[in-house]
Length: 396
Image (tube, rainbow, N blue to C red; front, side, top):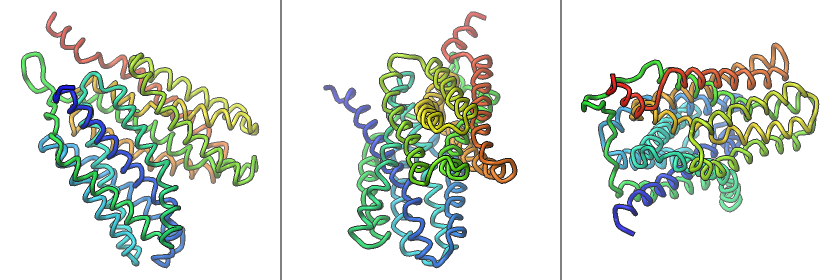
């Protein structure tokens, strides 16, 4: 195989391995939370600040990193982000003061946003209009890393007798990945150009609608995953073990759907896949709204929702690439909006839980999916693919 043909494959594999590391890191906090509470001598209600700190770090990291990827070598930036994340992970077991640990988690969140924006931007620059299946593959490997993380943490804690070994093992795994990515040649920076060679202006309305779509979708995904356990137990539909299984079914379906979406993205357009996913997700949520007291409806709805949600995020990113230049700055806006949705929608669901009752969860998910579908329809009316738009402009 010629060197020019091998290089995109090697680069894509590096992104996939980097996203496994990102998934391992993202999912590591939950299983280690009790240990961190013991380490800092704080209650679980206080240690929950770590989630907020990491989320704010992710939001700021997403916003600020986009401009850097538009100016500097992408792989060098990815390597620095991975190295920074490894260093912060290595510091976690050494922090016995909650305020300092919150600051470390903020840094980890910022590095997660930095890596998320970077890999999703660079893979578009590598594969351009053929990015669909590769983008879905990238997000599958994130889910794979998140799936492995609790298992790795549990085994490491068992062997070492504490959470320190788990964090140091994660840091040790990430360092060689950072070194390998830093040695690869970076793809050329993608700058949108018109047919006349001028820099394209940012389509603010299209960017705004797409960002709102991500806000609503990620809010629905995080809201369902975060509250379905409480929904089942508070309505006394099942015991805690069954409630946990329903949550696992959702995540399992999400991972399975991301794997299945790789070959589907080779055969169908992003528009067709996204429309199917949104309709299927709305139907799944509707089943749980219509039959709130029926466990079979809950099992089917949770599986269907996870399966349909699986490829929405990467497919919308692929579709956005046909509507606008996918610069680091634009990707940063999208991921910041996603982070904001992941923080605010679950918080809103919590408020509705107390004031209205657990049934408000399914109505909130259905409403979010319906509004996201409306954003998709508005985007289809607002924006034509870039090639079609350029051709229309030339005819005029």
